[in-house]
Image 1: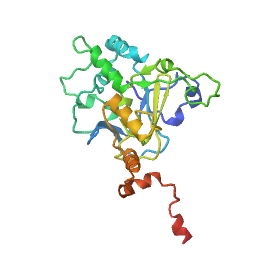
Image 2: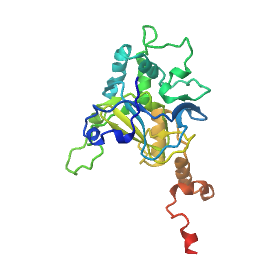
Image 3: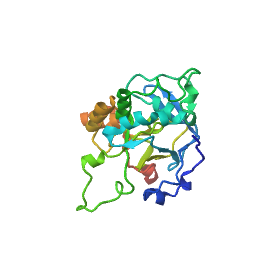
Image 4: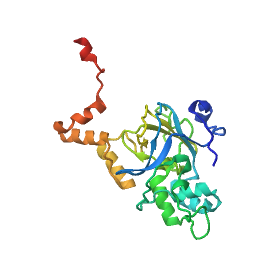
Length: 275
């Protein structure tokens, strides 16, 4: 897959927001690498400083379909995928323990750079992903795709809201996007428009930092987030935000100091300058 350089300002975002993604090309930022991250399994980090707003990933779904049908669609179409796309699909998390790899690899080279010489290199009869495993891949990795603009625009109260069935009409699988781990205080923004996902730096990010996204609605209270993450993805989040909010609920003031800086709205140096 050819991934040309495509900085954020090279995209006509007005056209994208209005549903025209015809000029968007797949893109992975040069600074990103896939790595085994202690305590978190596979993940993605940066080897260079990233500025807030930088485009990090533009990825088109391998396939989109109603959530209940997506696994069947992928099973049927996988034999027609190019070798790289199939290898990325085959390497997606399915709930089983993931193989650990010692050396980080450029994200653009994932997963070829970690595969042994005799590893499957493309779709072929006898090594295609079977439906039960594909269903697990979809359950753990699929994103709900959004129609242009409407999901992100303010609506009048009298406008009809999407039904639950309509909200599940279009799901997609994004093998590269799914490598980014979850936190309830992510350092990336994630926007899904039609069958594309766009990941951008939500703040300045230092070299060596893991790049993180959200798997659930992070506007929910901590107990609701933990319940959803446990039921849908099989883990509980132990990020700084969750730790702070859980201690706050328990009234454990002695354990809050390390996390108060996350929620401080005080102007740095303000009291010092007053004195």
